[in-house]
Image (cartoon, rainbow over the protein chains, first blue to last red):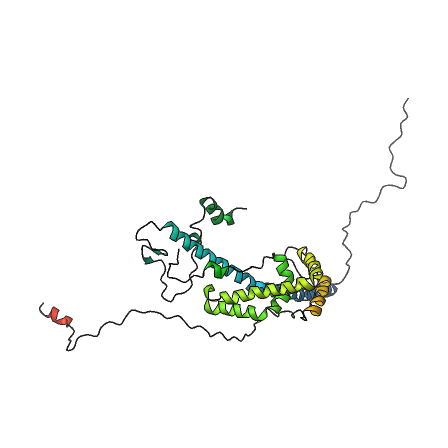
Length: 147
Length: 171
């Protein structure tokens, strides 16, 4: 036969029912909170000022390096561009040699640009790749769209 | 093509010189000392480019810049090859921007070697970024001549312009 135990309250009785509102105890006064806020903000700003100063030094150093090598890159690039223009002109002479009345660099004798002061003209992108192999044209022209 | 056969374009022989074929990290590593070593040539070239606005007229200056760069790199290769390579390895693995801030130790070693062999200090911070004056013997180019059409011929003597009111008077 199974033994039964009567379900009784705890020995020392139940806990007291909490019916009164419990207000949190205050850690610090309002003025202390303001002072702490000011102190932390000040520390943050001072730290930020130091960080910014250091960052500007780094950026200046990087800018120095970029400025220093700029002439070397530009010199090479200028020569490459001029070489390409020369090749394009030679190619046009070769391609259009059998066309009567065609003059290289013009549209049937009419200049493409108004250039009485003989300034340097950098041709448009399309004009630069006009003698390119057609299978590379799309790649060159829309390369910036392809990932 | 925008250039006719009468326009001046340099020949391929004029344009073909040995180019400095080094990658970005090597340029970044060498930048400060290279720039200081070739300071005069670089300033001359950049001034020419800014004044002429025409790469055809600054070819000799550009060649001088490239030659000077070769000279510096050759000297470094001769005397400070190991130090340079050590610094380059650090710069090359120093973040996506190849910053200098992570490589101060190797930079000091490299700088000391350059100081001993080439007698050149690392330029102070902001040396290249500030505005620097440059004295040159090249005359400053003015605007090129602008060929305007001839002036219209003068009117004949005893010329009386027609009075437009006379036409209207008969109405």
